[in-house]
Amino acid sequence: MFTAKDLNELLEYQAPAPVLSLIFRNDFIGNTPETNKLILRSLIKGIQAEEDLKAVRVFFEKEFDWAASRSAVVYSCQQDGFFRAYSFSVDMKNQVQISRGLMLKSLVSTLDRFSGFGVTLVDQQKTRMMAFHLGELVAESIFEGEEVQRVKQSGGTRPMGGLSGVEGDPDRIKTIIDRNFRKASQLADQFLKKHDIRRVFLGGTEPTTATFKEYLPKVWQSLISGVFPVELTAKKQYILELIQEIAQMKDDRHQQRLVETVITETAKGRRGVLRAEDVLGAVREGRIQTLLVEEDFHQPGFCCTGCDYLTVQKMEGCPFCSGLFEKIGDIGELAVRNVLLTGGRIKVIKNDPVFHKHGGIGALLRY
Ligand SMILES: [Zn+2]
Image 1 (cartoon, protein in one colour):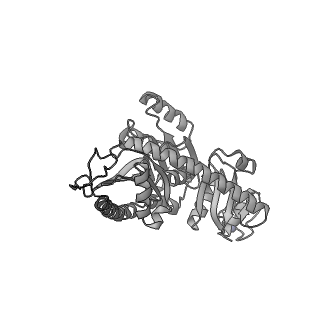
Image 2: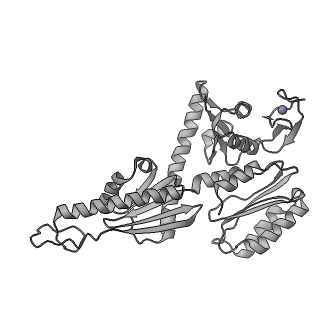
């Protein structure tokens, strides 16, 4: 399974020759395998890199699971003996390119949108914890606390709601639930930490989730992306679809706020930049905190072979190191790589007409 460690390896790879990058969406639900194979064939048709294509074909024939994987990302630079292929359980957009660097934007976006999902389903006794990474269940753990129903008291008069008429001492029941929640929250804390969770989802009946939330450490409370009613025994696919939907709505709102912030900050001459040339200047200075780039952003430009300085303007020699410029197909991809290498973040913007009007590339600056 693809992790941040794999991304780091790809980031650090310096290709001595052009690299073939390929993203293929295998829609095995909507299409027959034959149709998907045809789509792949037409995607790589006309690519001038025979050795790399050979390696790609071998991967799809021998290793790729056509019946279960929704996407594949492949990099090949046979001249350097470099080949990496990853399968994903989430959808990605078809794309192919031969370029100086690896095409990483979509991969970074997929990691950003689909990794580190932690789900905690609770009732008064049990807790079911799940970690999803890139559309797959990577861990599951169940905690069974003390049974709340067992508390019976001869003189009890108050029936407990939902416990089929079992009567009990409300204080004792409260104590047991408190103990269960305390233990469950400790276990959830360990579980969420262990699996690098970045978004937390709580499921269960309304009063239970609200109470349980208070037991969680503050750091996890602040990462709660959604709370929803669900049975503890719900199927994992159902839960996955539910949390992905909630996450997407949250992402869309976050994206919109980020775009607004960059536009405002740029207009006020503060911590924002919008024109491609200004963004690239900030990339060179390592000032970018978050780079915003449209999903379909493609703009040719020039890259200094001496210091990696990116520009959209044709110049004779590099103003910083007098190096020579090389023409590149997409400044967006190289900007993504440079920003990640200097510790900045990437936000790939999807379907935002306002951002598109502003050029499709922008950034929030560190200072
Ligand atoms: Zn230079």
